Image 1: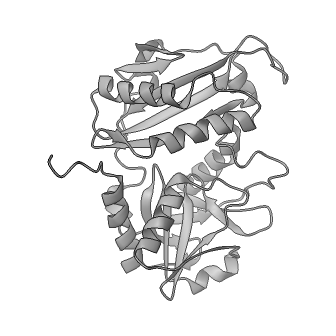
Image 2 (image 1 turned 120 degrees about the horizontal axis):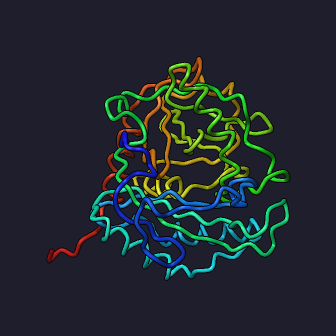
Image 3 (image 1 turned 60 degrees about the vertical axis):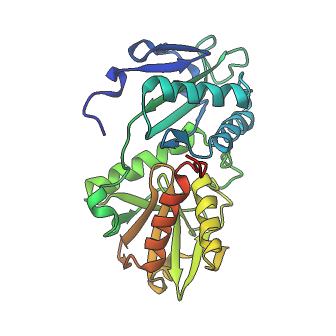
Length: 296
């Protein structure tokens, strides 16, 4: 990641339908999204000049806004077109893509019915979420203090900014103890996910993953499940309790930023990155690359 502050990077940002200089993409301090977390976003990656599963991400952005009670004022086609043009204007082939939609500053207070819904897209180069040298050795996770909430208390099907508050707290606490990330349980005490990625486990050649009933069913998660099934692996989505972790031989995370990242340790539990994890690392890397016509 660049040592340059993010508000000082070069290039352009798509901001409410226009391409503006990166340093000029600013909002007011009384923006509703800043004070009340009325914001939704996506994390996407471009590989070889194409954004992987762009439409799926765009549709989820729009749906996330709907769940938070606002309509994103651009169609999926408009957002996709803007994303692709911005990627070209930035001159990147491989990059990270961050669209975000939020309530503006017209009204301040819990209720802000008349506030403008703003939309921006930024694209920058972000090579690897975790240390590349440690990735295939397996990263180390702590066990988070905070838990994913009951869906009756939070809009868990939306990629809402406010839901990541406890993720930031948990990841910072883990890093302070020398870990790369943290595993979060849900309100029932079941295994849920890492702070920004879904989690999978392997036992006797079968892949197990928590049922996505109180956290996002990640686009990368679904992709990896499909890849695993193509390889003939059985994938079981179910409730997983922490005491079961000692029974698993492998563990890995999936997410747009994390891609597929093996795990060697979660608190007192140990895992060894094995053939299934390594196979899915390779399969995912092949899957995300643009599929060029044979003639090319």
